[in-house]
Length: 144
Image (cartoon, rainbow, N blue to C red; front, side, top):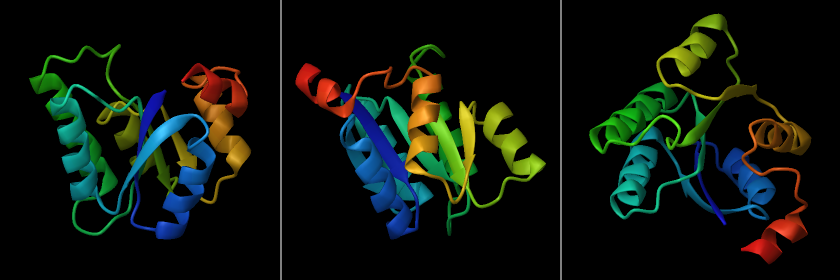
């Protein structure tokens, strides 16, 4: 089963993503960038890295860009190849060029979802990058 990390300071948004992802992945949540980076580091250190991470851009303290850049730094330190690196989807109410550019080019995010987003939009992005394939949730559970 996939492992997913949701990093968002909005508990409603975290819960929404948790509901969408839970049929496909074992999910953890973090309420801010620092907690997300810490959870990522623990998982990487335990040899159980996250397969997919949803990171909100705007959070107090350490924002999503800083958290993602820290995650990429930890992967680099541990020799994780780019093909084995966590797949990251940035989420934000801000879809301006500067934030999108930083997510892709500095954080190597796969994609950027503007809030508010739908369940179908999340699942379409996961399928587009072959993170969940075309399986139904029931099939994903039976294979776990």
